[in-house]
Image (cartoon, rainbow, N blue to C red; front, side, top):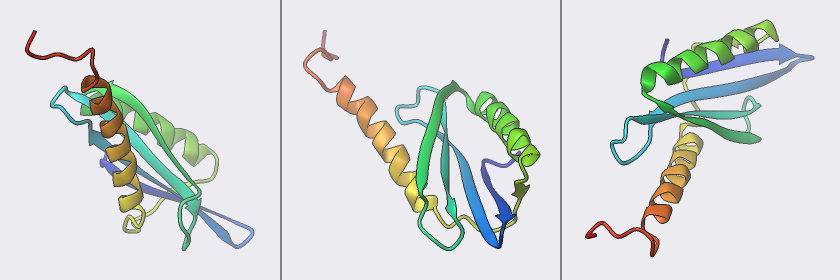
Amino acid sequence: MSRNLCLTRQCLGLVTRIECAIRPLAGDTGMWTLLFAAGMAGEQPSAIKAQGPFRGPVVAESILDTIVESLTLHGYELADDPQIWCLHLQAQLREINGGRYRNLSGPEFRPEH
C-alpha cells in the first residue's frame, strides 16, 4: 500500500476527504507515525490527527491498511486525487518531532554523562 492515500466520500452533494501519510519520526530511531487530515473537499482540513509511534514502516502500513478497510466499509473510496493538505500533515509531523526533542533537551538529558 502507498505511504500517501486520499479517501473521499460523497453524501448529500458534499465531499468529505481524508488524507493519510506514513512518515518516519526524527532521530533515526526506526519509529514511524500515521498522519491524517480530514475535512470537506475544497476547504482547509477541519481535523489533523496522528497515531503511533510504530516500530517500522511495515507496522504503520499494516495499521493504515486496517483503517482504510474500516473507512471503506463506511462509504469512503480511495481516490487518485493529489494530496492538497500535505503542508498541514508536515506541520503536524514537525510538532510531533519538536515535542520529542524538547523532552530530550531538558535538564534531565545529559548526553555527556
